[in-house]
Length: 376
Image (cartoon, rainbow, N blue to C red; front, side, top):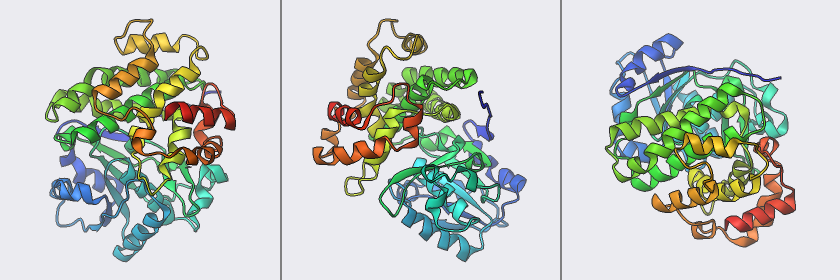
């Protein structure tokens, strides 16, 4: 049985941010808490968003989103939400701000502790329609969390695991590529490869969802054509538009599930002392998993090559390695500072990650350890 749902309200194009007041009015939000990070504030993007709001909309600000969102930060943002008497959330930024906003939206309307709502704890059914409404405003083109039903959080027990529910979909996503113009080269590369990885990995998931497959292939096509252009020229409007679309499409296909790339990157992201960028982790791990799944996905590699304008016999893993090098990303986990002594613990966590369940070829703990070593 295939469950197929699409998805939420999306305003997409240059200038879409001007529609924010209208969208807030449609969902009945008058006192939003803005959840973002200090980088967004420093870049002037917060001011550009709030500058669209009329005086009748009273906002409060939480700009303490960490690079990998934590339960601790969610509780701090919850305090700000309650102090303001907020009736909704505007999430501005990358996937971290949007994921943190989703955690706050649960905490604001559901009994604690947050961990009981994690998918790994059987929490999917515990998240209800009472979730506080979210408007998502992405300022990067990577995670697609603006149209995603999940949030990845580092909980106080050290685990980096997901909250998943259709009720976590933002009520509206305002995708304005204007907000990504001038994004630094390294962040453009890491988030762009994140988008490509999402499109590739969800397409390879064995779950049956032909519409999601078509969307994932279209996203992979756009990312393959426009990522390098976006990295090389931060003001390339066509490239920025297409990369934001690719990121959104990768997340639109998430309902098929992801796979071993994410099962490995999620626990690595919980290493708070390293503060590893999620998209860059995905980019670095993807070649290893493409080799692992080779021969176990039917004709899907050939279909990906066709979508990405590559010869049918292209070595996809090698192609991704070359693409990573071209856009300036690390050659492996060791280059990102990952020490080998953490790999046994990461392997134990990977097999428990919800993304492990939808990978085409499911590794054992020992095989995950070998895959981590290959990705080093």
